Image 1 (cartoon, rainbow, N blue to C red):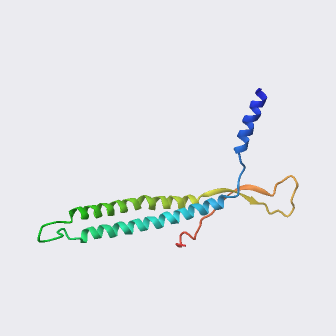
Image 2 (cartoon, rainbow, N blue to C red):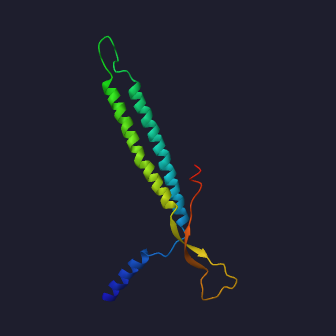
Length: 141
């Protein structure tokens, strides 16, 4: 019974273990895509917040000068909406920068060995550290 449990536990443990993968490039591309989307969303929120805030400033306080109704509620709602939109854009700018920096960090990948004589005891790939800085994000593409 102990042998069966040991085999089952080892089977479930080793099933989830994986060796090094060569998919780090797609992770970097995903991070850069996410960074670009966050950057674009942050600019949209910032622009909408500024426009809403300026609209709240431009609206006159008195709606109808004859009976005395005012726009104070509308001005307050537009002002707070603009302020919250501008405040929401700040964390998105920070997250975008963090994702871009994470994509540019060192990654562990397997690199091919270029040897004139391939010996049977050595493999064709070995783990190596490589630095990749995606320059297409800096150009705005």
